[in-house]
Length: 276
Image (cartoon, rainbow, N blue to C red; front, side):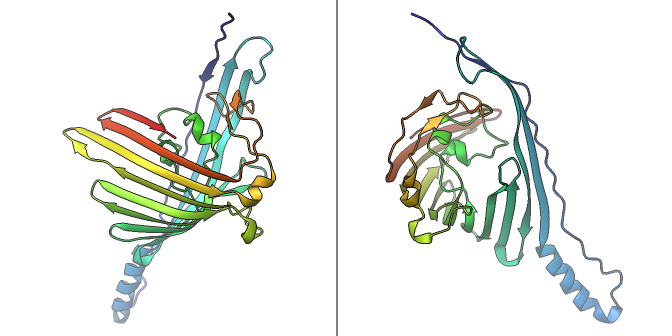
């Protein structure tokens, strides 16, 4: 029996962040008779904020394996290069637009309008649907350099739609209806349609924060089924285009997926697991 060993080493992952307020209105030039207007303008200005956001992540990696295996060697690549803006507005409204420059052509990642109330949030536009816990976590806060293999295998990408989110203490539920990403909604009648729901309970037990969740995904592919569907994943690095695990080409019409997740956080230590 032959035994093969795959090794991967990550050299660096760089994150750069920048945030700055949009503007500040000065009342130095206001006339004494216009104090009330200057006060109102300052109050309105405090409710508006334009915050630029950008991120650059660069990978250097090595993948080893037996002679003749495809996809091994040394690699370097820009993982992400994003530029965008966050806009805060009065009455709980906000918006975000962000572009990804490593894609060819350049593509939108987030492009949505959001309203936030006391316990409720509604989002309209291109956004993350109710994805698994690992995908819901920010790129900057994942436990490992890559997310779980099923996240990329099942194509948890941003989609266009409307979602609602409700939080009550330790319990929360969110759900939405979605169609294709903004780059694809050419013919609304034949675009994909999906429904995603996710709920979780995160109680505090002494010094430990617990987390239990469940999710459901339904999707009718419509014009997505015109091309064969492959559920596949790279090795522990996204830097190579070689997939060692995957299905043959499938004529997928609909998707139904269920998921369960559990996690615990205590100080600097955490545990997380999920199945789909």
